[in-house]
Amino acid sequence: MNRTRSADVVPAPGSPVSRVVAPEILDDLPASDARALRSRRDLRRLNHLMRNPRILASALSGNGGTRAVSSIAELGAGDGWVLSQAVSFLPPTTGRVTLVDRQGPPASETTRSLESRGWNASFFKADVFDWLQTADSHDAIVCNLFLHHFEGPDVVRLLRLAAGKCRLFIALEPRRSRPALFFSRFVWLLGFSAVTQHDAVVSVRAGFCGGELGALWPEPETWTCEEQEANLANHLFVARRQA
Image 1 (cartoon, rainbow, N blue to C red):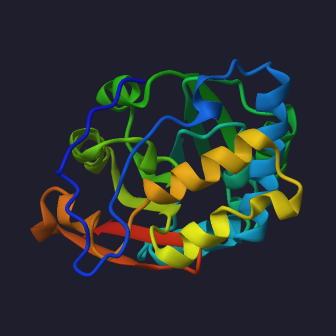
Image 2 (cartoon, rainbow, N blue to C red):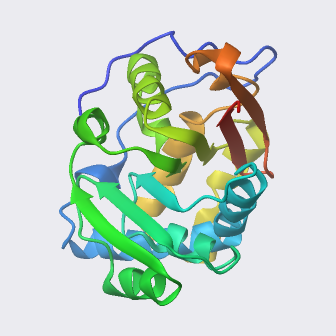
């Protein structure tokens, strides 16, 4: 993925860490590479430690309005594990889940887990921009540790396309702060691989804080946007279409 520097994501006032997007090693490793397989196992542990499935589930259940969320698409879904765990915290229902990633397919246990809970799961191996231009609408589109891979113009473009395909958009991203950056340098203490150690620091530097994502959301007059620190490591952005 080619990236260029951009000032379109304006740093939050008082932010002590400038936003810098740089390549992550995992992005360019073949899915079958041993280093990629280990790093993805690390990411499952990291998502569990950061409570990302529970945070996503809370955002999905708390922002669906009077009509329950019955169709969810995840962009940059990876092996789909995080979303499969998130829906396990939702009330029992039936619906459809669409997992979109340029690699794949998702892990077999992910598909089994989703379908055992009443969700019909499908996978698209595609560039998210290409998929968004032709995709069906979903109640919700979610991103978990994904938007930070993109520079400002591509973030703007992705948000604009997503807004036309859903009534609820949720992004859970690395929180860009000095404490998060400090702790990202010590993930080796958790036994994470060299790839994960490198990418953790890169991810925090490319993360978000303050109201940066809300400032880029299109048609703010017809949406309610909320943006907050989810915890030390996470930054949560939720956009909900007004009834």
